[in-house]
Amino acid sequence: MSSIPKFETDRLLLREITLKDSDSYQRHFNDYAVISQLASVVPWPYPDNGAEDFIKSVIIPQQGKDRWFWGIFLKENPNEMVGGVDLWRKGTPENRGFWLGKKFWGRGIMTEAVRPVMDYAFDHLGFEMLVFSNALGNSKSRRIKEKTGARLVGTRPAKFVSAEYSEAEIWELTKKEWLKFRSTEVDKIIFSPADPSLAEWWFRDRQEAETFRFNPLAPSTVESLRERLSKASSDLGAFEKAEFYFWFLKKSDEIVGHINMQNINRMMLTAEIGYGVSAHFRGRGFATSAIRKLASDVFLNTPIRKLIAFVHEENIPSCKALENAGFHLEGILREHYLVNGKPTNEIIYGLLRKDLGSPFYRRVYF
Image (cartoon, rainbow, N blue to C red; front, side):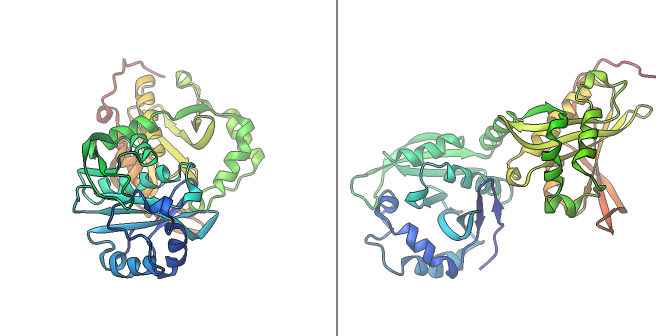
């Protein structure tokens, strides 16, 4: 069985499954409420060893080839499979299926689960379009398509486990449509000014394992961070005076991360950016959205001509966020930082004003 990537969302873990997961698979899947609206190829009554046989004869032989199956696990109970998302190359006509245990319905879990799968399908597997289907009358499945940008293109006759259903709705989602939908979604991110009262949140966020792994963080306390926030500016109109810019990133009223600009060189008109997204919000495009917004605002409102970012060479998600925001890889600085006492190579990325193409009426700063 070829391996497939693991995904982590706000509440969920998505990973490949093994025979060890067959008991929880069987327990949550063997329910007529779950199975009745699935294609008629699913047997009912469901065999006692149905999940084990499906994993052994279908998933394991095809996994990571032309089929990809993720089990859905709640972070609070990471060994209990509560559902699954299935993706396959050859459409029938659909390319994706999913199921979720009944006790977990109505909590937005499946909508949350399919997002990283679609990102992976379009970004890594080369799909240009995905086709979905559901039983006509299955309002829950229909709503998931609607909430993730798919278009209803028609209906066709189909057979389901329950004879009550005889037609399927067909939906399409192209890569272009998905990227537009995702950008519209993350564009709702809000830049909130530096607020010293949020120093405790920033301190807790800096303790996260991946943050320590990739960043040369100086020792800090809540009080030292509160002082930094009190001195930070969030007003690009005060460019002549500010030395350090900082914003909290919010979606609705919830903090999802932060972004900053520092090491401002007014002679060379360059500045360095830094950013971080909290662990349970990663993989949802927030970093890319924030970087794009900051770059646009900086080039529109200041004379800065180039933004620079340094990234640990193993921090692939951060590299991807910068590249998706239009930054160019400019080189590798060998053993540039000491991270946890170990010399590490840093990748340097740059974005020029002309790369972004923002208008700017030049002012001279002395």
